[in-house]
Amino acid sequence: MTRHGQLIGIGADAIAEYKRLHADAWPGVLAKITDCNIRNYSIFLKEPENLLFAYFEYVGTDFEADMAKMAADPETQRWWSKCMPLQRPLDSRAEGEWWAEMPEVFHHD
Image 1 (cartoon, rainbow, N blue to C red):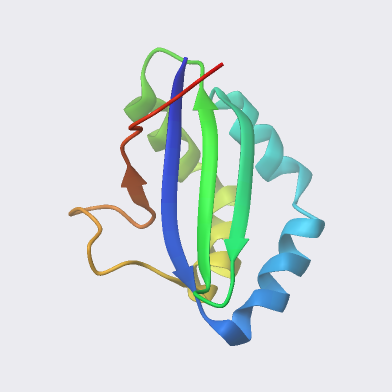
Image 2 (image 1 turned 30 degrees about the vertical axis):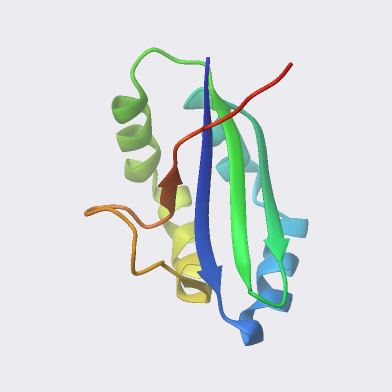
């Protein structure tokens, strides 16, 4: 199992819509997340900075393949078409990232 932390911005005017979407997340999207070996997935909002922090645990053996499988899913693509316009990727993100990956520097069970 690997833990992942990610960060992205969100427009102040988009927060209510983002919360609304996630309060009623599509069952097919949630099923695909599980199918792609993601567990314990949460998104947190920090205001007034308007940052979204995502945390999840990956329990599979090929993260890149599972993320490609998720990206190829038509329902997930439709979901992203609703969510992505609300998000503001960080200028400091790595090449090819939408959500900026954050390395873990401390963990305690």
